[in-house]
Amino acid sequence: VQLLTKTTDLENPRLRACFSYGSIGKALELDLEAVLAKRDQMLTLLEAWISRPTFQTVFERCEKHPLRTELRKKAEGLGFLDTLLTLFHDVYYLQVDTAERVVNEDQIDRLQRISKGLTSEDLRALISAVGEAQQDIKRNVNPRMCFETLWLGKPKHDS
Image (cartoon, rainbow, N blue to C red; front, side, top):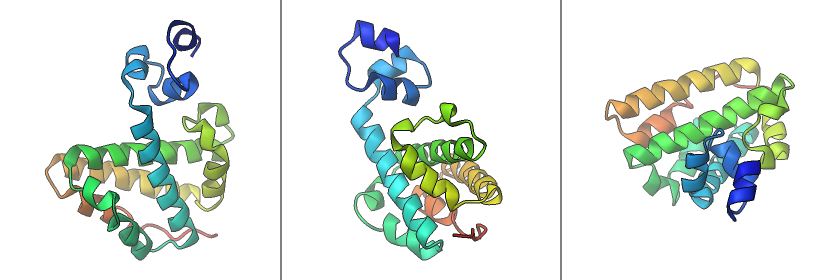
């Protein structure tokens, strides 16, 4: 962060450092606006799913623009899954009191609310499902179908 701040005039050097996991090259190339837009879409989806944990909730979100269009592409589908995985890891870090490891630190309040709606079993199941969906997309299965179906059969959490 200090190096980014001293040597560049990039906006949000702290967030850039977090999203690039410390890689200066990635931080400099990062399209922060696109990353934040994806992240915010996934946070909104998670918040909706926490309040109504059904497949229908996810399906309704995925069938709306822009997700409907973006999830048609393999690279975009994998990008959304990566974003979702990062959010799940952040929720886990909050649950085990290691908030200093949270990547999306600017959204800590939203992540804490999500954390309260997910059990550790929910997180394990969802993280595993994301990994399976990533593998399926790499095997050329429809990205939107992989993204939507990862929510099927997940444990229902207590709200």
